[in-house]
Length: 403
Image (cartoon, rainbow, N blue to C red; front, top):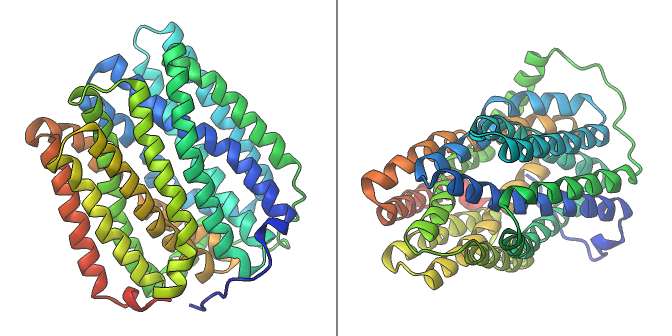
């Protein structure tokens, strides 16, 4: 892979980047509030760690079942129009979820399929956004743009949950879904403003052939293959920790919805710091070593609330996990963005996106039962041990020397 030298000119002078960022701002704002509101809603409806785990598992099934094909479709369509369709689809899912909680005696029957489709549309939107960024920006700005998007997501992870926590005090949780519909519609309008010229039309091979080409491109890049295997593990441990940490905060530490939102805000503050320094640290030590160290230090965040169970320590854990974990995410996204051509990026992103989430539905579905069997603290320690072993094994591979 060719190392990208960061340019001296500002990314903020690129109009297309600014429009993409502003559209993603509102979509991400809605997503951050939704990611907090949904598990809290499920907890209020069921008071069950098992149901919370199952709901999160269902949310990640689209990545497992559909991401491969979404990547192929995105490479064949106008990515701007596709992104707008995904935003409208999310609005419909939110409307269904709101109506179910408002009117149905057993709203979970509607919440589960709505959550599945919500994440399917979310993945379709982000896959297309990556492709648009690849086309709209020079190669020299790709890593910087990725880091700035990551910082923006972390900023929203700070303010979004705090605002949603206040909203949850003012009204029933499901009423927040109406606000989210407004945010996604604003993102739709912003994206509509961006001039976008699709890549020159090409003759696309059949779907299975296109998937095969994507697999071949991924298989040829051994570094990306190793990173993908590691991400399967760390995504699972991270997802299990986060969903059961919310249950731990509510059921064990007896925290209110607003206090839980402060945990997510601490995560966002950490993410902002991580996003701001990731570029600089990568220049000094290289992408591979930064990725490995991030995975290793993130395991400490998993263990902290198990060793010292309290609200301040849990908040510190969220801060550490996000600040360090975001660096690993930037490394992963940047490598993929830089290593593959625009014609293959959608397919490779779809394939890796599916693989990245391979263990998450199973881990999340099992996490609630593991809490009942082992206890939350033991589950946190188990996640930390698995994460640390993953970092050690990755250190023995070629990834360590990736710049």
